[in-house]
Length: 344
Image (cartoon, rainbow, N blue to C red; front, side):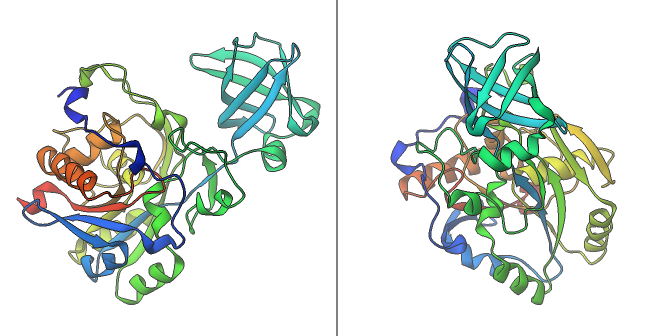
């Protein structure tokens, strides 16, 4: 298939710019067993799950990864920390009128500074001076890295609302947004109904926002992200299978993590990097149902959802969501989908 197969028209007015007052206040678009869209509320989700199902959540925590500064020449610089390599060393995107040269100094807000060590493809390696750790700098002057389609500066409220309530493993530059709809009350209520939850970690990288630059999807090279599946989660998945429950992924990041750890045909503990690109034709080994937000046109996240629930059904559901004025992207509404093989 081609990138253009995943295009849909989206009015800019439907891109959510702020979160709803309540985490669980979103709408929920469901595809029924015939692939037909049904308009629900996110608070209806417990009724769509079954006792014995297992929710799998991504516990990554978003770093305050955006930094602002200036070069020695006075030019403005914006940086997005992609990954902490060592206590004082980071991999980052750097945006400036001219790319900084190796060895150049960047003065940051708060009097901090870093030096450009080297360039690695689209990234720069930065070393923070004076023995100051990356973590300390981000805590002091870092900004929450809202996605590029949210056309406003980050606010103090985003530090809490652009995190899931179960975030605990810091390292992401974007939130696993399907998880933003859950509050602790809903998780506790699901557990009382026999619907447990387990965790994986995928540190969402800035590559999640990069456009697919080739029309032939076979030529696309997926960005690299660090993920892990602990032994405990594998045990819970296997126990769910034994009781004939479903594995319900909360977000596309969980799908990619679980399917990476299941490439052998069964789930295994995993820690490493994934470039798994899921598109129509992919054979799923682990995930049975999916809670997800709406994704950008022509994105790898949309190809994943189409692979999961059927290309024609998903694209029709997106057109329905536009016509019914659902809210799109990170702070938007959600979908609940079952794997196409299960519905066929």
